[in-house]
Image 1 (cartoon, helix red, strand yellow):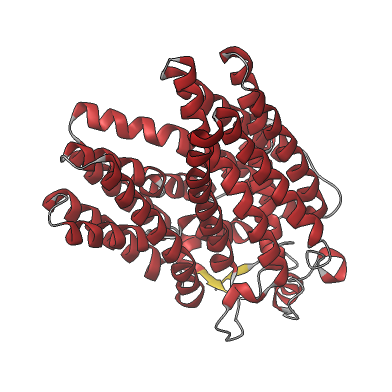
Image 2: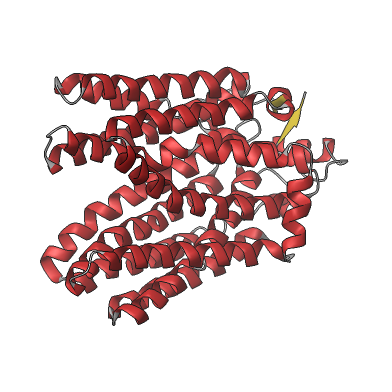
Length: 423
């Protein structure tokens, strides 16, 4: 299983791009936590901390597809690095001024969130030109999904360590300085400097004019909702058990399940269309969430949490392939950024719904939100199967009437797989 991943990491520039992107995503993975800790340390209420974290998250969700579109238009270095610097300066402003005056604090987190560079979408756009063969690109997508799980597990631990050693303000500064270094590592690489998006048709909707992409985004809104609800439900379960540490066990088990699932998924060759495969993976993901409603003892619950995470990374990895197949020509970075945004908005909705569910009907009801989210995602994919079919037996650029990706692939036959190309 490891041989395929080693082959990818040995490819020129691959390890650098993956590491740089992972490091560059540290602020986006931990920014909301750092903001909450900073606000509380400055004397702000939990409500204020939650509001500032939510503002940061919404600004990030708005900025990602817009910056992704800019990357498709003018290239990666001219967008990614300036955006990373401006985002970091927003957090520097927050650390320097504190939470008073409040409008200035809100402005700082808006700037920090909105200008978060779309490194995730950028990396997925680079993989075809870096790795060439389709099977290697698909394995890289799985490795990318696994790396994302590692970052979202290890990142919060790193922030809490910085807070313990220094202060919440120092944590804000350090994670954003590291984020700028990660972005710099990516944009100075040859593939990032050389990459150019395919010529695009001018359209105000950009990537969103693809019905297949819209269907996928709708499904992942509900998958994000399921995952977001589990974070709140896990806290309620830990409270029921009278041990805060139980929450850590559940989240670690969820991440471990996703890690194992992603590694296994990426290690084998799959037949059939990724759209059909995603349908089955989503069904298994939804089934995995349902037993959480039983809320058994800690050991059994931890095992169920691990099981529920197994199909998350495969779902993400498969979705990356589907995004590439359905993104209209010249919009690949924007399309991947929309997936990031939709997933994040769904997670925010999940946390918002799960809280009242706990108060109204208890912990089991909050886990039921996760099950409902998984089932809703499955229903969306079932209802949109026709628009998710890619014309030409799965070779083309999606059901948008835009033959751009088809031409890109035919024109780059020596690579076997391409959404963007090197100039």
